[in-house]
Length: 135
Image (cartoon, rainbow, N blue to C red; front, top):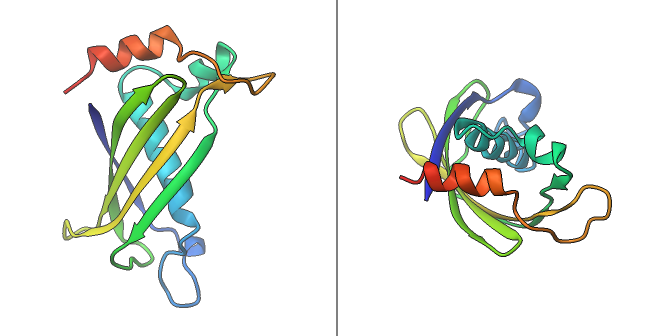
């Protein structure tokens, strides 16, 4: 499918008393990586919402392999695994500066109407952009 690399530094307020990035913060970094993948294929998430569609997360799964600390430069490799019906699946692999895998995750999102939260079709322009950018 499609993959995109997103880099960020671990922020000080994202660490916990043990000096590692708190597990709750992986969610926000993976969300940023997911929408940067869309942006990389010419579809900012705001354009999806502009046509009355939103994408809530309906499931998440994380595997914590190594810890990471304040100011480390991390890279998230985000991949669209599949789109089927009104759902889309993403896979994330998080690497540290030594290119060691420190976390793996998957999310499943649904396409729903912005005003009614009912499942809806994937916007055609998004499907087209995904098809045109397959690797």
